[in-house]
Amino acid sequence: MSVPLQFELHTVESIKSTNTALKSLAKDGAPEGYVLCALQQTAGRGRMNRVFFSPKGTGLYLSILLRPALPLSPAALTCMSAVAVFDTIRSFDLPCGIKWVNDLYMHGKKVCGILVEGASKQNGIFDYAVCGIGVNLFPPLEGFPKSVADKAGAVFDRAFDEELRKTFLKRLLLRFKHYYDQLPALTFAETYRSNQFCLGKPVLFSAETGMRRGTAESIDDAFRLVVDSDGEKISLDRGDVVLLD
Image (cartoon, rainbow, N blue to C red; front, side):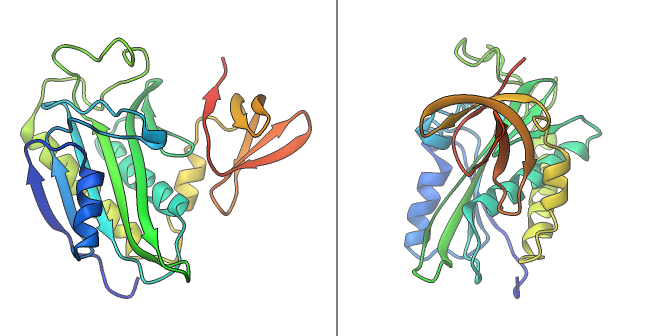
């Protein structure tokens, strides 16, 4: 990008959804680089309006406002955000993998979800884009709800640590800025592709005709997942993918 990204950090104790609030601020003229960070979300959202469990004292919940001056796809911003989180986790010498399109996993459990939302002009350039990032940093004292207990994990296996949370946030914003400032060069793309843990494995995916089985083969230049299903190559740009045992 022509102008380096500068962050303006705002932290609140509790909010319904950082993405919802920041979209409203964006419509009112909030500047690029505005970061809204919450210690708790009472109505956190993921893709397809799914609930994102966001209790106090466990996670990092933030949204970053962007006003890119060139055409970008939501997929590119989603994957860029995923790599920024991936790099941050790896900076603590911890193992991590990316699951297309917007999730990060550790030890077989999801520790981060990403939701990019925005409004675009007719020429394909975003008026604004909001990159929402939710990271489970520490295990909840009461444990995860039964509905997600077998799927959700935490980055750190320890009690809540405010200084560690701040360190994680600082590193994350630095990595995010690193990749964003280099656009339109997609310098994050190779890291995104090479750390996918579903490639080469059987998956169940949603298609127009319903759920189908196939083998996840690659990530194409548009960040679509290419799946081989009975010899048919299918490029997915949205939907659910479930890794089969």
